[in-house]
Figure (cartoon, rainbow, N blue to C red):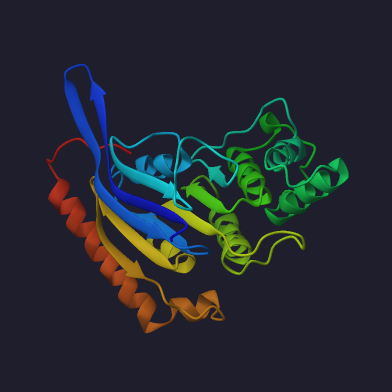
Length: 272
């Protein structure tokens, strides 16, 4: 049994006398500890797909399953990072992260919760801002707090919807490395779980190849192709980028992007 499954999933939105099909017969299986990147042009349905896994939307056809059970809503077995930071404005950075940790009920001791919150804020480069409120932080810094909160929750499944889009290139690379360390290598807090099942939505081809065990390329409404990313775990970023396999995957993804854009010029309206 797969950790996450989408079986023959379709989703239609209804507006007065119109019906728009956002997803059409999606079939995806994600194994425990597998890191899957969802990639495709804007409006192909990536964010809609991840909203089903989060329990924020529900399919009009088919099944969304976690550990074999239908997704009936949000849950503490899933941590979610949205495209846009979503912090409580009345809480400091540390308290925002601590709030997320508390929801999982893994820890009862406030001192331990605070220690973990500070640890993850340090890992996203915000050790000097733990007592700052969201209005005192830039947009990119607020997003880093949101990422720290989700990673600190130590959930079985991570859902990340373009989490690094508002972050500068230097910090984006650092967060990619942190994501690999925590999610793929399981190098987490000493009392915490190992590898996570993760679904990561991105527009960035290079980011997808660096992070993923498998890349799912979407065309509007549908899965177009799946590509296995099979680099040995001990390879560095530089070794991966310089390998022939990296160039092969990148070329294939670029071709899929250009093909999709060409097919969609003048085409029907799509959704996120």
